[in-house]
Length: 621
Image 1 (tube, rainbow, N blue to C red):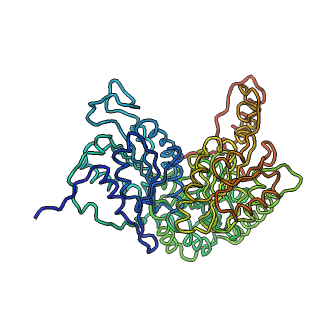
Image 2: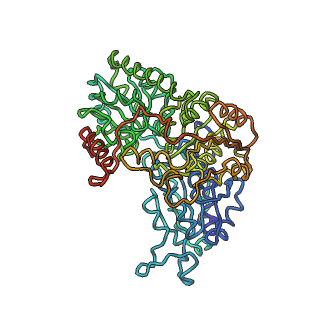
């Protein structure tokens, strides 16, 4: 008796397979693919579009306005679901697809699952060259989709319908792997999408997946425990991987039992509540004096679920030269950085295993008191920093207003520019897992698109809470069209547009390195004929949102209350000062290139001052 088969096109097989894949999330079995974002063109509408039409209920399709923003939304959706669910993005051949490269890079950098289903040129090459095809004269198989190889964890071009049996399974395994997680890309030639094949029915049977928890090696745990027990000044650095592992409770319990202060990375913000006695604060370039002062004296540092990027480590100047690292990470690549003692494994299981090994070890009481005193001093600085009165409007003041009025379970989203630093430093966490600061790829334009994606995911579990987006005028002008679709889809956002007249944080960096203001603030652009202010309120209202402009933080508070009560996306606009009001404390050194030769004395002086801190830079691999 032969294997039962069903005849489907390649596109139909892909969609049917996705519709029948489920995941166990805390005992609830739900589809692992939450649906998708799509813009149709000639490269995907006729075949993939036909297949998706027949599965609208199982795989809801959100129409995008820009492929890049679709990818950002998919990334934010995956973050909200802690990488347990993903969305697909589909784009036509050519420019529609290449618009997704930036989004894929963001997801790759942040280790986020995203499935990309993109049109490709005809496999037969009979109509070559086709519309939007990029031709390489000496390499006919090379096309724009090959650009995704650098920004994908899994990449394939489907050249025969049978290949999806292997490729889809491999792609899904990548999307759900805690160590290898990232974008999976499938190039779909336009003719192959419509070709039929007799697929085994078993391929489409419902399957329930689970996220793999890698048990750490006993020898690695033993080595880590031996080192940690020698620590007189231990510190935990908690990254985003703590949340993806579902290890917040274990991390908190580990820190409390052994009385070890905890610093948070940008991705790890909201691992601990702001008032937890062991919360040392955010660490690094966008950090706090409290965490950075402790980090500079720590002798043993346990890094959990973090890739230790340069903003976390102050380009590796934030620590004592003889500090030793233990890195707990599901990814071998991250666990072995900078001569760390690696513990390759799931954060939750690794912390539990390490706890068994270090038994009754507790950090010295004077060290714990020092960390608490540092945090108390930092809290006082933040309270003053976010206060408002006669001072110029600032990011910090806006953050303080919202922080005081939001619900503990509201989700806060921002990215790029000056807002990530200001939010990381000044936001006081009210509940765990409520902060999304996209700074892995530091990608402008993520804010509103990411807010939309986060809201879609949030509405699936916490529909009565809000998604709050902080965005500067520069990022708003770069990408804002998802305001329109947040209204159309009923996915309410509260968006704060903080207008500082250009790219003020880069202007600040420009000035801090001795350079004159040039081409960042609108008024400093040499090609601008007449500078004028954008009416962000009118623009947002034109896309269907409620919108208003406020003059100061006090008015912002009242407007935020109205936004909370509103029935749709609400945009609040406020000007902030481009020069004053920045959070000046809490920063470590950060390596940037500066000119060794210049006709400007200020540039040369700044170069010498900047380079003077390099002596503290840790040398590792």
